[in-house]
Every structure is written in structure tokens, then in C-alpha cells.
Image (cartoon, rainbow, N blue to C red; front, side):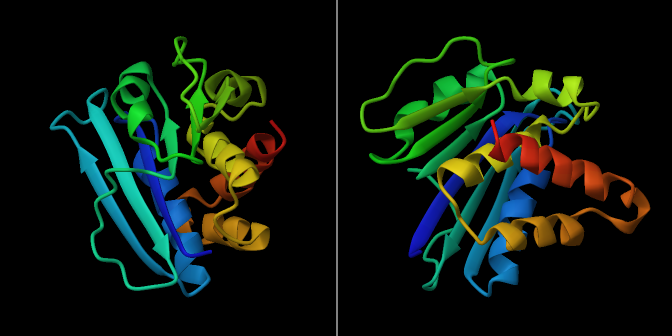
Amino acid sequence: MATENILLAGFGGQGVLFAGKVIASAGLIEGRELSWLPSYGPEMRGGTANCSVVLSDDPIGSPLVTTPDALIAMNQPSFDKFCDKVTDGGVIVVDSTLVPSTHEIEGVRLCAIPAAQMAEEAGLKGLANIICVGKLFAEAPFCDKDTLFAAIDKCVPARKAAMVEKNKQALKIGMNA
């Protein structure tokens, strides 16, 4: 698998950091080298939030992702800021519910899905982030499928145990979108 540089970006409160943690945990379960670097503005909710995840079979030189192989953009400002930085052959997953204006980028696969709307319709409000992770996995698998589901088990805290199956359902929705 070599090295995968993944950038997740959106507003605070959209679960961008949690989604990155799920991806990083999948790498940890598989025994890969990894880094998870969150970055967020001073606002609790509504400010900017992004997360750099590097999964590698070799030691990682820098945890900062400046040219991602994959981008999950959860809002328009994030798409606008990062879309042109995705490497040739890379993939962008956008939540078209909150990213109404996209454009094709030569050499990059653009996958626009209405993740927030899909989450709402499935009774999974607040899980658009995990739907996007499922879509990214379907487009550019970064781990084994069973590992990704195991990462959900690892990342959802015990006090929110009722959310484990909902997160797994959201993954499946994204994988099939």
C-alpha cells in the first residue's frame, strides 16, 4: 500500500477529527506507521477544522499533509481551499449537501455525494462524516474492510456504545453510494 496522505476538512462540529481518528485507527490495527494531526480554529463549533492522516508502510517523515492523495471536504470553504492540492491520480469526496459548487480537476476523481442528506434520511443525523469515510474507502481502499469496521469499535467511546452500529451503518451507506 506504500503511503497514503489523507486530508479531511470542514467546520468544527462536523466530526472531521473523529473521521480522521477512525482512518488512523484502521492503520494502527493493521500495524502500519501512522500520524493523525488535528488542526482547528479557536471556535468550538462552526470554525475551521481539518485533520491530516498519513498511513504508511515506512517511517513517516512529516505528519503534515500538504499534497493529499485523498481529500474529504465537508463544506465549500474546505473544497475551495484544498481541491487544487490533491495529487494527480487522487480522489476527492465532497458532501454535496454542503458543497454545492464543485469543478472537475484534471487527473483527480471527484465523488460528490449528499452525505448530510443521506445521513438525515437514514436516521443517522450527524454521521455525514462517516458516510464520507465509507465513500472514500469504496473509491480508494486504505485498509481491509473488516479493519475499518473494527476501527469504529475502537473509536466510539464506551459511553456512546449505542452509536457503534449507527456508525457502521453510515460506513455501509457511504460504501454503497
